[in-house]
Amino acid sequence: MSRFEILCVTMHQNDFSKIEQMNIHSDVVFANQADTTRFDEKEFNGHYARMITTDTRGVGINRNLALIYAKGEICLFSDDDITYNDDVEKKVLAEFDTHPDADIIIFHLNSDDPTRTPKKYSKTKKHSRLKGLRWGATRVAFRLSAAKKANLWFTTLFGGGCVFAAGEDSLWLNEARKKGLKFYVSKETIGNVSFESSTWFTGYDEKLFYGKGAFCAQKSPRFANIWPIYYVWRFINKKELSSKEKYVWMKHGIKGYREMLSFNAYKEKYKL
Image (cartoon, rainbow, N blue to C red):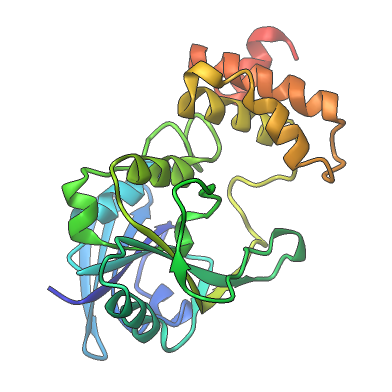
């Protein structure tokens, strides 16, 4: 069992070239969506890489596959559009060693999109249970034993390639909070993320707010109809849609979740 392991979801890989492209210097598991089913492994520079290739679709399914195969004491979720700093393993392990009560630590990634720059924290500290969990999975490092003990898995309804486009990471984090895992945020930057070729983000458009509505219906069924007001306020500066249009599409998303209809299926059914 290694101390540190990266769990990366990727697509249509035929080899381990992502190791070099992502500047990986640690053990790694690739959950690879393709058109075949196979298992590959490789030793490199004293580390061990495994690739689980299946013909499944959906980021949640593949993050779960990576979790099934994970062996590291401390794991870091990853996408294949990240380039890591050379010392990522050292930084992550040092933070967990310094904060032995932490189950999950959120790290910083630099972004190539100034409109989607992740929040950077000035110091490492415990994250209050009263604060939001607005982080993508790729910033999340965690103790594998804590995740297994809490029986944490990703939803297969939300995320790229699923019925609803995004939100699987937030739902995983919310479930972790409900089950009592302790969160920290870190001052450390571990790499760079590129948003040039996102598989799901097409802008602050109808599809995004439809997904937000579906997310609200799943996360908080009793208060689903209240959450759209918050998201209209949160995204008030995003001008692709008017506030009314954002609200309407989130309401469509709530209804679509209850009927289990994707964005395109919903539009087709209701001739939108």
